[in-house]
Amino acid sequence: MNRDTELFWWPARVLHWLMAAMVLAMLFVGVGMVASVSARHSWLLALHKPLGAAILVLAVLRLALRLWRAPPPLPADLPALQRLAAQASHWLLYALMLALPLVGWAMLSAGGYPVMLSESLRLPAIAPFDAGWFAALRGLHRVLAYALFGLILLHAAAALYHGLIRRDGVLRSMLWRRRAAPTKQDST
Amino acid sequence: MSSPTPPPDSTDRPRRPPFPLARWALIAAAVTGVAAAFGYVGGWLDPHRLTSQALVDRLQVNGGAHPGYRRNHAKGVCVTGYFDSNGQAARYSKAALFAPGRTPLVGRFAIPGGNPHAPDFGVPIRSLALRLTQADGQQWRTGMNSMPVFPVATPQAFYEQLAAGRPDPATGKPDPAKQAAFFAAHPETAAFRAWAKNHKPSASYATETYYGLNAFYFVDTAGTRHAVRWRVAADNGPEGVAPTPPPEDYLDGELGRRLAQGPLRWRLLVTLGQAGDPTADATRTWPQDRPEIDAGSVVLERSEPQAQGACRDINFDPLILPAGIAGSDDPLLPARSSAYAESYRRRTAEQAGGSAAVHAQEPRR
Image 1 (cartoon, rainbow over the protein chains, first blue to last red):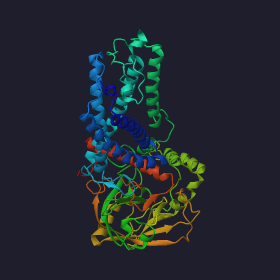
Image 2: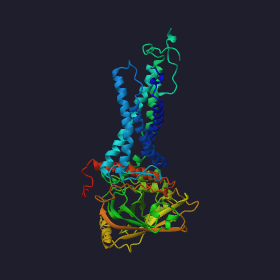
Image 3: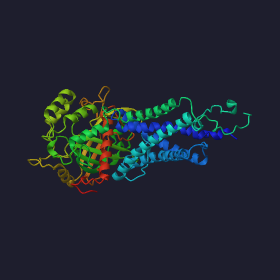
Image 4: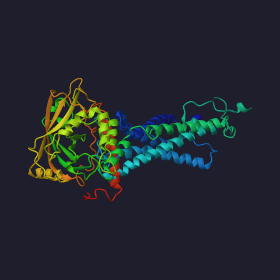
């Protein structure tokens, strides 16, 4: 049996940690820029849009990889409720990583803003210029962002629970270096 | 790895890790730490920081509750027309709209303050905001005022000015003592006060000159940045005289009567700054002898009431700029951008919420 089936395959691990950094940065950028009235507002806003577009592209790629190759199985002794929570939260994370950039893009379209990823690179509008649409999408963007942040905290807490309390190999499956597998020699 | 595959080790895994309490504490600390950092960045854990929400809250207090309207410059009228570039500015800015030719625009004349039913002649200031849309979809949005300088140079000072201008519940007017104290503490307001003292409220939107107030940069095709300030200078004949006493709502009708006679024109004049000219201080003008470019004409053809006009749902954020124009280090610019976005968020939500009071006096679109 190939030991690597206990690890996520390497493209999934690379994408996971890259996107973890990007998504967390994105959430902090977003919450910071809407409050800030200083020069930070401008450069955070200029960062928020291309970063969001990059997350959207990577999230699509990641979803495709996830559907193509199944992740390592959860420990057989994981209680059913935790198993359900793990699976539901993972799919919800995928949904939010895809939805937030799309809602943001549609929201700017509905507000009549040019969706500029750089000084001169503009994305087309994907929603009609309409204040009602803007209001709904702007509210949704905020709610979904808080939901994603909350879910990431739960996800991180659960990962640490697996790594520190249960010590069942779930956290390790997303890391690079595996400790030597505990063997019978230790107990004999 | 020649040893045989060990059996699943889950049953051998110790159920109780060493120092379980410390492990739980570590998890709790990690999650709480990230959540607290998020709260700090968002401003919730730092109530004294000036945020866009705090600025707009104060505008809202001063202007009163008018759901669906802009939180400042609430009373206004929509206009449409075009910018007719003569190509003179193209040497300094690569923006497509400065190449010779026409760029369509939507604009808005307004008077300052958060009350959409304020009397036109209660304040000496008029404003003109424009949104020009290039063929490539890039936009230039600018919000200009009829005074050459802004009263204050920083968002913090503006925030304090709003507190000093808060209407006294007893009189409905700002407390003169508080305003005097504010101006005394802010000598940078002197240029604005001198202007306001000598400037009668204009009887026409069409005869005012509107100043961009903040400095910007034009960026040419070689990437060189040129510090600039712009204004649009009226070319529409004499001001005319308003009836006495002046009616509360005069300017919209006066504008409509002029437009019925034909388009109205302004010249877009761009002043080129020199090394040492302040770009981060909207309270100071640049020396009179600075070179000036006549970039072309802003031509307005039609006006519409704002409730159903094309300008209603536009946020005239002065940092929405095409390639070829860039913001300066003026601290008012990002504050305007951020506060306008917050005002736009609130008023569009109120409109969508179907608040009965929204634009109640005017037909909805």
